[in-house]
Length: 331
Image (cartoon, rainbow, N blue to C red):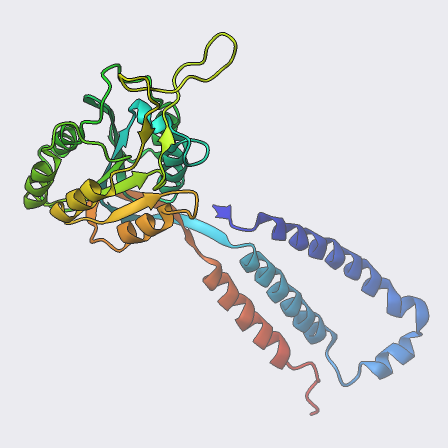
């Protein structure tokens, strides 16, 4: 047995102490203050035993009602629980262009911030993470452990993959492998990048993925103006920026067109991570509105609430105490 509100049992203890007080108080009150003749005159039309029974029934109903209010739980029941959701694969760009600070604090940190909030608000969905630059790698397999996913996400930086570049097609191919042997529906990809593609096959691969039941969503990270790509600082603390072969500073700009084309080919949507708003909310709403699949089913054991029975007993005793006669029948 357990109780939902065990602190209510303290009130039951207070009632018990009060009953003891009444017992000794009533036992001596009449004898101390009135003569036997007066007591007989006052009680000739009433039955003292009936009055005691009436009072005790009322106090008992109050005690049982207090016990019911504590939420007694007796016995257990087992019921099946289904966990429904989608398989969500986050494909995150870790090329050095994601260090550009045209969004605060940087493209990569902004993406991680938004994705952190998105994962924290998931319910029932499984999530995986793929990182890519010039090549792509499965960083976290599909899991429903969101705390682990957040820990992995926070450790991502632009030094994870030594092969630089932005191979979107390689990233989408890796996402396809993450869904191997899964059913054709309920598979969602979030491709988070600044949009550079050095292989040019991403649109065709996205279309093929859509034919296999996958939804490809793309998220552009950055501003329209673009930003310089910071490199490692000199010993003096001065920040160096990436330059082309002619020594000119390179300004990295997001490629919205290709990302929109990839999303269209993949039957998905295009989003933006910028300084203006929290785009994860729109993505979260779209995921919630998707058709869900049953990811897992398990049995859940819980205590059975029994306050209804005690409440009914208390009500019956209260009614009896209210209508119980105390007047002695005249012969």
